Image 1 (cartoon, rainbow, N blue to C red):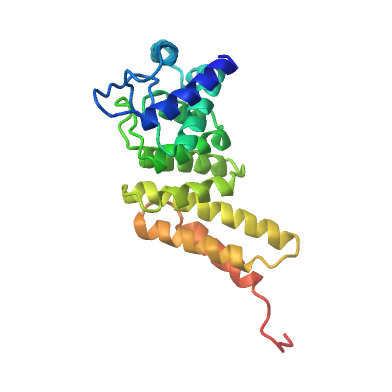
Image 2: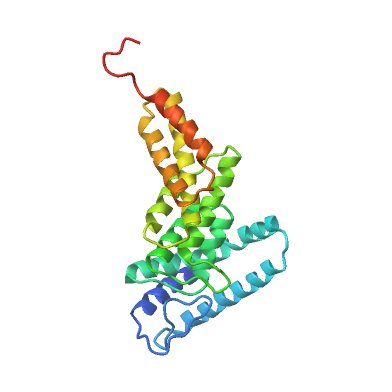
Length: 256
């Protein structure tokens, strides 16, 4: 997709945000509203990106292997990058949201392929403007984002691989007021607690005071435990409590 289409998407989003809301129609790549006031070239671009998405979804449906689906999404994503960037820019300039299937679908695909940093601007937009998820997704946006990112983090942590704590905490901050099943929220708090524990152990090993990190880790995991008894943090809580006790400095004046 060319830079011209990125600019067209930007203009389209800005036009749609200020257009009258009579006769709204939704398409796969549409902004918040499609009206006759939008120029013909822009609407042609909407139709083209919608057809591309329909084709790609049909292709993905034919693939059985999860790994191959992820590989296919990784190949497809660059074709949507400029269009989505244009929509987001136009929406920011107009101070409005952009709906339609393309943007939330690309958000999910970026999560699926592990591009969490790339997904975050889309997550922020979708959550801030309450963008509806396409009907093929059973979960609302907040629940999907929290669960998918938390599960990706927990999977990485189980393999003793770090996960970006900033991403986890940003997702928590963005969804703190969203209603969802306790089990889903507990997964995210568990992932945050585990990553804080990792950071605390690293700080402790470097000779730094890790007490605040251990305290935050315990708070997150205990909150997860309170939400869902079987979230899987009991053993780690005990281990972190021991590490916290060891990390605390001796009382002033102690002679041992």
